[in-house]
Image (tube, rainbow over all chains, first blue to last red; front, side):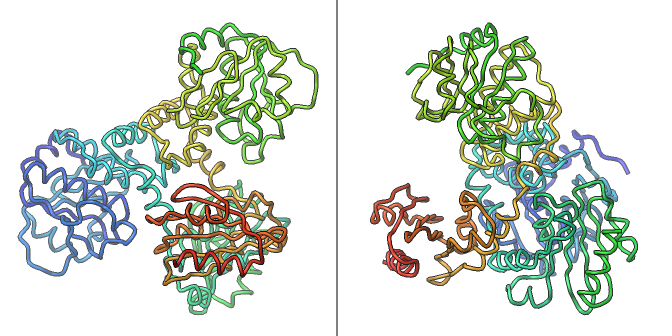
Length: 318
Length: 318
């Protein structure tokens, strides 16, 4: 469980040829864009780096440079020299592409998750970094590759998305120092920010509308309930994963201390609880076999929707 | 129309006593928080600085430090020595407090608006700064006052709000360099960000819900119409100014090139147009005596709501 010194990993990367870069399954902004930036930098050192994704590139990132460096995995036979897992906490997060990793001569693991399992031959894990983008930024500098607009744009997207637009607690002064350097190298901040933060699907927008319509305020506005049924999702034309973040519509409401999202599915109710106050919502989730922490917890409760809502209401007022 | 050298304004500020600081009317995050940071810094130099606001402090900023340095103006007689206008493009933006400015022995104007009218005895106007917060940051450093958590928090809010969370085109590498320094001085990024960016009123949330319900997509999803009537606002319990930004619900929708908000009021329709593409919406606004620029324009059209919508639709499809 040891991280290799920076100079050693730089040496490995500089000497590698025909590298394959593997971001985790369902690649998010950091996984995808850190990988792209690394691939572009390696290209400049005459290393034919290629990204293999588990799925198609998410539409929101389709504007990114370096699309010619990306392939979607399809059981094709490749004989990789060096395989580099990026933003991947453990081997399972490589999905079907684990076979490529196993076949490789040299395996590398570049990550920032504190839970990383050090699964590669060479592990470079820096949990203090807000995003793997910060780590790749450092490596690119040490490899002697000069930042250009394309590389900087990818690193900017990696860092901006993993820090929630520089708003999460993982954002540090070093994050801002790095971004200052990326901006100097030509990132178009307003154009990129609009593409990665503002874009919303019709399904998600309609789901938000339905969620707002369902809002119930209890206990003088201290508690907010939002309800999403299977029908809500169908009518909105939304996908299941677009329920992500909907509970925050209640959490962000002025005066609300506890927000709850009730999500009906197959005769069960998925309950997501958020607390803005000292109230510990993990205690309530725990009562129903769920878990989480003080400010964010969840559980699944069997039973009819209204029944579950009244039980949780009673718990919250207890 | 000349900006005083930095060393001279620092000299004026250092020597001033009993300063009065005036952010512009309806003070926003930058005006209010830059003023607060300046007042705190002057306090440390034994200058009894006080802020006079035109209105009560906006609720969203009620968490800020330094509340004891703020007074709301009420025609009281004060004999100011030095009066400092902050983030104020012209004298009208001082509202009723213009009398304090006129009575002052020394008048100072610290601003970043390129349209500033240089209305004071001493003018320090730096249009290249994303926020006046950047200018005050520089002055505090030159005054030899060390950043503490309170001053840094105010400067952070000033810069974060005026750059839309570091997303607008006014954000520069210097912006990020300054923020890195503020974070080192103790800003709690996640706590502050949540307070200034996520908090939403019940009226605004319901207005958003109603706006989403009103959404019409035309021309295969290329055009989005959102409609807000007087009744919509009343039922939502929203205020007029909470219509601000509602047009972006359409603009941000995937596939939308032109978004239009129709706002019915007193038998007229206020039309706000936004373009994500090369289409120049200021041409349409101009047809009705309105104006703006290529990507954002507006006009007021007399007539019944449906009639106005069909006219604008015809214009957009022409």
